Length: 113
Length: 116
Image (cartoon, rainbow over all chains, first blue to last red):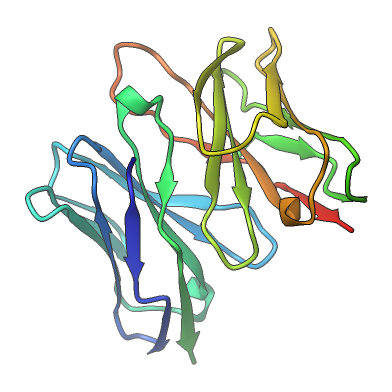
């Protein structure tokens, strides 16, 4: 089955700096890659997603890139703010598997003011 | 916030007991997926229901079972509870049509289950 690895497990950045989280996946048939943000005690919240027919997607300070050949995708947060502090999860899925999401282990991001 | 709701919010059970968790989908969604999230880990897929039929199952034993109702709400049942079943149980709803590629899943707030 699919396996998703996520790095780093923790990331500390100064406010205003950029944060980058990287994920690799094992199943070349995966075609959907969402990113979720989970604050302490809250539900995972979708922040951005990308499908396999697209190489990059941006939404304000957040961008995601996908390299299908290398089977990795990354989340980029620019101009970080204290409210960006949370745990971020990447995930992968494919239609043939009933859209089952396989998650990475998570990255705890701390933005220091 | 999504329109996905779950009940109860918290639950404490003892080993060997049975538990039922409930999920109400976002309006218009016809697919519900259940995930188990242990402390400090990413969610693990349990199973998915599409139009009242199980549509995929993760690596969980048969004592984890589910139902989906005609209004697309869903239940997760766990029998013979074990200590390791202590976790946050999340449901996610989505709109699944054969013609589309992959459909975004929106999570509920979860049920925190503690097994003593």
